[in-house]
Image (cartoon, rainbow over all chains, first blue to last red; front, side, top):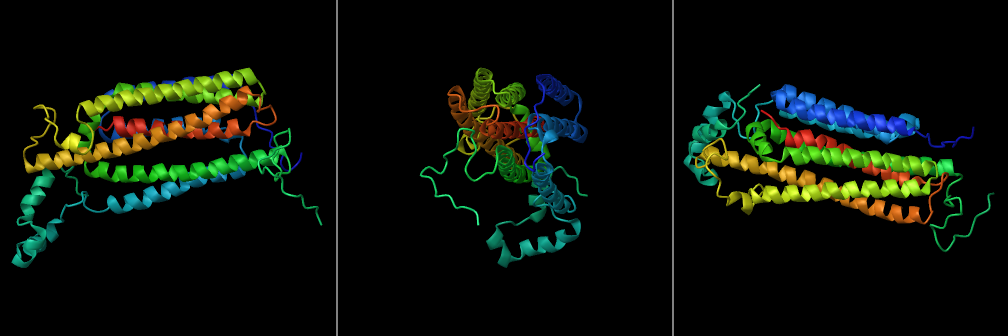
Length: 145
Length: 240
């Protein structure tokens, strides 16, 4: 066997058909669950099924199953970097008060003072930070972890 | 010392086997082609990944508004389009299968079926955009000057909080159009590639030993399918 004997593996049509049927069934399950599950559970279920569908397409339709190790490294690197981006980004955003304008209770007094300082009001146009915060909070998820 | 070959006039000139002059054999050529496509797809994963990361952060912040606009999208068109695209991917897999077996007529037939379903996806997507815009669900002036029916939104849009809610809803629509629009652009590019492949396949340019272009185009087409697999739950199924 030569170093470059990478004659493509030929998957049977039956295997493709089977995967196709499974993919369509998973789509049906996704839609059904969307009407049953709510909240975080629904999101986890929908994304979990999407990951399974993506893996089936990657492994069978895109022939990763029978690809060289080097191809696995190339394909895997994409998802490794994606995971790094997601982990570091969410580590930041989920570990502080949610929402772009939410104030920590402890900061509220000092910020209120800053805004009522006549010298600063002209620059920001915001006179009542509590009112501005309350307007936003009405539609804020309101979960401060 | 190895002999140096004079450069040919046409750099893409291949011998009848389909082997390009800078490769040793077809196996090496196939491996290089496959790796090249996967390297490109890795950049694509991070391209869509960056957009979806931004979407995720705003979705966490603005979940109530995002969930409400998501409900106004046409779920049934999104689901139908998923089925259409999965079927298209299935035919693409069969096209690659036929190419590897050197079956020319089958290859052309499956490529055409793949293209037809790809066009069906874009057609449905176009109808969906048309319906969305008709309901003022398009960011910018169309959204901001819309005469919303009472009860269309769950909040009173005439309060400061209501205006903030609409601003957040509009942001969801910006993500919706950019994500689906870029996905559709990928589909258009893919359809162009498939069209060229169909013509070349009909001329008998691909054989059982040389069919890398079909293989590589297949990888791209399946990737575009995978992107949509994630867009469906993320855009159409936002629930509180």
